[in-house]
Image (cartoon, rainbow, N blue to C red; front, side, top):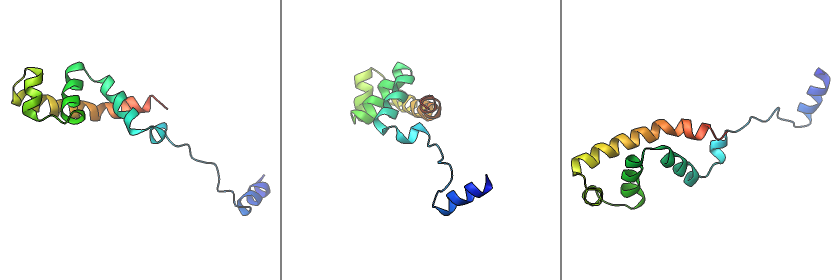
Length: 94
């Protein structure tokens, strides 16, 4: 077997291909949607207002009936939860 392996290597074979995680092949939009869907509704709404609709803190607070300070806290928590969920949500697609 060693001889056949050597012959393959000499012919240009680079060895077994490493499997790439599915996350690399997943479009960023799909990853974002999976993460958003995994978040609680109020976190999803905060992130949608702030980053998808490009609303300011003040506009988000008015839209959601919250104080600006509350929006800042919820945004921080939502981003932290989304970062924590990214691995969990994207690794299940493997």
